[in-house]
Image (cartoon, rainbow, N blue to C red; front, top):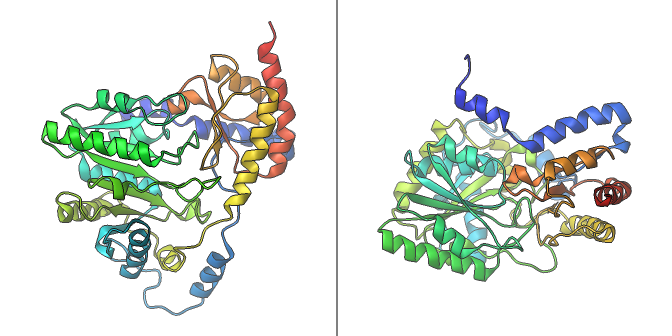
Length: 395
């Protein structure tokens, strides 16, 4: 065999999201883009804010020495200081630039964090359903994935997390607002997780890290707030991305934020900086670092996504679908009307509707709809959704 057996096996079970996206490209060529309703990929269709565009144009025209050169390993000081100032303002913690490492998006951040934390055989707990690439990220650093179920409303099940913790547990990864469910973990949820990890850490005489994947933390609805893990738990680390906040997924810009009270803080920060280099993320894009430094309080118009959510939820509820209304992000995760979620995706495909089966998120019996699409895509798909569920109700 010419390639790694592990990679070959991973390829055979790789992202259903990308598979559906590729299927959509074929259908669009066959039927026309306006006749295909592609909800497969969480690719924001909202334009970046005007402030970003003005800053980009302004910066592009300036003569700055090494404007496109390598940055310091952790990122530009002024950018990290701006990020730290915002986090400090919202949490009350004494954050400094030294607690921030700029990253190539949240995916890059998570890989760096896991590389810095894990020895081979260390266990990392993820909550089901979860972003499809978490197990691969953990495996990249020799870790072992442990799964913990969530409650019926997709909130954390503390007893399930407790059962998953062993003497080899190194970290727990949470994602709120959640992909694929849109669930936001409450302050009580976070406090319960923090208490559990504190008690378990003392009992096992070890540090268990809480890692929060937060690319959607500012895409929330109905006055919901996302509680800070940094305030709740000392051994906490955030992986953040501007992909959704500023609609910049292709620019790959984000950061790692380390709790200033974390145990062995300096060692952890030095490890994160080293891993940023040895994993090949050398470094976060310099132009984007300069731009986002002054945009810490800027974000896309979240009301646009809320309108899309309400439009979709109203239409699917009328057709008879059952779901938890998303509190954030831009995903809906309804139950499938038949037990086989993959088969139901095929039923939708007959109506040129592309969604992702819940099995891809380790949660069969559901399917994910990414509603960061044109309103017309949502509106024109509703008849197909209704016909699909009707077909499944037939004897």
